[in-house]
Length: 158
Image (tube, rainbow, N blue to C red; front, side, top):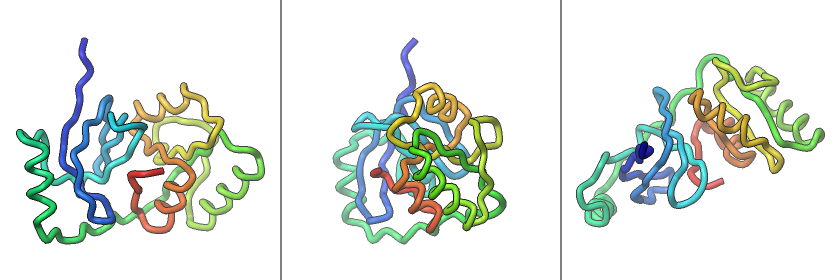
């Protein structure tokens, strides 16, 4: 059975317009996440998707590059964000947990239903990452998590 590839035109927070192909996508009410065929697991803000399944991706990207695109407001984090940290050295994990708690986030030790964010380090296990992806949890690198915790924005690049 062939796996579904989502294809779309995307504008990131810097205003860069690009064509994306994402395999194994999961979606929440705010984000689409999956394996970006240009390399790596990525998280996209749904409000920044300009067009789905473009017939001529190159032409459509060029079209959107000529448009004066309105800034997309960042989603409000609201409520309690549950976050789990995995694959970090103890000192780094403590620092990140303190950062999260200072922003009103709840810490979790495992990936389970209700978790919002899995922040991964250099030694993260693939099974935990895959479970999080299947549950629709945002999977963020440390730099992505820090930006997300400050702004609500999930940068495309780690």
